[in-house]
Length: 133
Length: 155
Image (cartoon, rainbow over the protein chains, first blue to last red):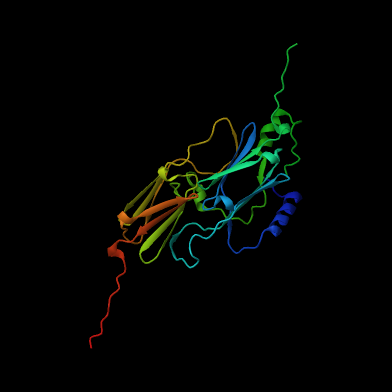
């Protein structure tokens, strides 16, 4: 997928500057994104994130999801087995579909965020009736 | 970048390819993908088993796995000797009548075994699941604990 337009790169740099610098790595959460007639639905896995530590932003077609994760083990912990790292979750999407931002809603349970992005009226598929004459 | 993909005005034949581009990940370049993301998808760990971290202190071993979307009643934990088995049913498959733009989350059953360095006291094993993170406390069997040997002076 082409992501190299000047527009998205510039946006990316601006956002990166706003982000506080942190030593910890950030991870890209896995998502399912599906579309129904009425909405786009984003389901993002944010294990270890508390509901109050999720920051969702939608502006000018740019959706960002940021989940803050506190360290769960002391820094000096010695792992017998270490298969994954722990850190914040962050991911951004550009959405060209026209969204009714005032009606965006979100639920969070068991480490999974479900984000509802209702299509604006004009973006809903219109059924065109063909009348026989 | 797809913002100029305006709605309406496209011939029907173009609709499909346009839908595929409704979303694009923007500037995710510096982020790290996780191995467990492949759960159920035949990824890096063959059986689709979630990644596990294990650490210890003097009395216990601790195992942690990220299992978002699962509840405790959907999980089965077995401890035997020095082996911990984690089993789960996982989510069911795709929903009908919708269009998927991304489908990265794992689904379906998974099962895997973690071999621990010492024998575990099965009776005292405890597990909790919070915000999709499973933590299992595995007390070391008495026989496995390091014993402090008193050295007495003889004179």
